[in-house]
Image 1: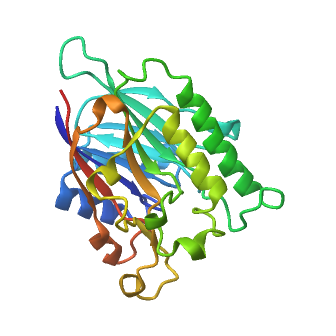
Image 2: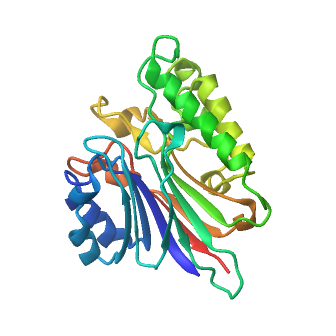
Length: 273
């Protein structure tokens, strides 16, 4: 099974529907995972996206906030919408694709949007930051209890809102006390990764000593000149799929599009038996 997978925090799918169309026509993903769609399911632009070649669509929406959607040219079955932390937020969606070979385990794709965490990295005064830490802890507990770690065929993508490595931010020293790169967050994301021995696909293709960003603030007048970015968007696989992502690209050119998201898409080409 060969397919191109893309993940993109779109920051309102209805406002940026024309950019989704532009992206789809230019890069031809077979599966597109969107985060922060900011609409309820009945408001999701289903017909337009089906017309652009995605007959299989699953949505977990919420009015004005959060929300994730998975669009596919390949048939899938809805696997789960998990309410992580039990706050009623639409932040997770899982779908399952049938195995390419007879008897093969299904391929499960998790689409996630981790809470941003607010501005103050102190859970005592900022409930949003506490929520983020609790969310990551819940992910660790969840994936840590999954059985058959060596055989599970899973891909996890989305806006995880944590830049884990020093080279995932424009200045490690200056951002150690800035939400998305604080030690409580990076340590917890590593615990999530270790809970199921997840493989960081992006760092399989770009060595850890090189900078790699997927987000640039709207506050930067010339984002490319200042290049004060962070890697907040991720693609992970379980160990059984290590090496299945034969190519990966961060599409930073889309950050120059008019009225675009502050995140850029990440695409990976997979070849899976």
